[in-house]
Image (tube, rainbow, N blue to C red):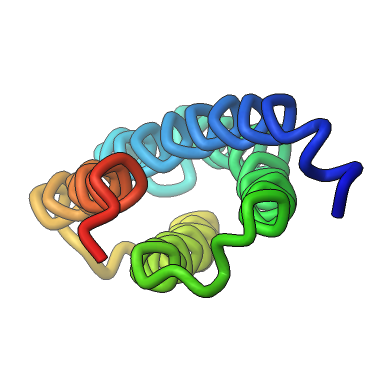
Length: 146
C-alpha cells in the first residue's frame, strides 16, 4: 500500500491521461458510424470506414479503457477510496460507460456486416452519452457529494 501511496500522483496522471483518450474515442466512434452509414453499402468508402473504426477501437479505444480501469483501481486503492459513496457512484457510471463502449464495438461489427439498425440522427443522440457521463463523473470526483 505504501508503494501505491508513493506513486499516487503518477497513478492519478495515468488515469486522467487515459480517460481523455478513452473519452475522445467514445466521442469519435459514433461520428464515424454516422459517416459510415452515409456511405453506399459495399463501396470502397464503406470499406475505409470499417478500417478506420477498427483502428480506432484497437489502437485507442479498448487499450485506453483497460488502462483507465487499471490506473483507476490502483488510484482508489492508494487513497483508500473504496469505502467512499462518491466512488461507488463513479464506478456505476464507469461501468455504464464500459457497457456503452461494448455496445459501440458490437454496433461497429453490425455496420461491417452491412446492417444499419439505427439512423444517423439516433447515432448523433447516442454521441451525447459520454459527455453526460463525464459531467456526472467529474462532479462526483471533484465535489464528492457523499
